[in-house]
Image (tube, rainbow, N blue to C red):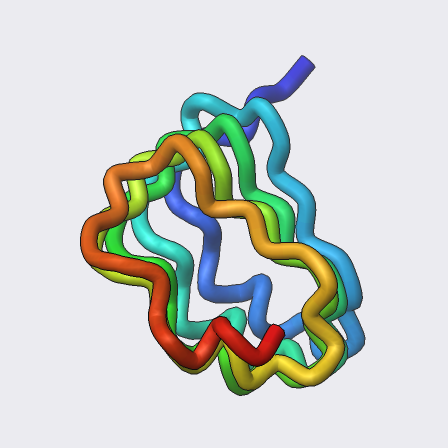
Length: 112
């Protein structure tokens, strides 16, 4: 078995029609969620759990209007929850527990 280790490569953004990203129980996955994911206009599900990704929950996720499921739980994400996520028209589930997030849930989430 070959293990995934290191950061999520920017090349993931070149898989234009990718609809689902899943990294589950990948402890050697490190670094931030790359900006390149913003190019995945068809992405419906982003699932990166039980890994060691760091940095902020990216604001650019709010531009991916096909997203209906985001699970970034059990990582080392920090900062606040970006209000832009509440603009996702198809979002049905958002999991951010067990990170190092600070601040309150943005008021804009009241309409979800």
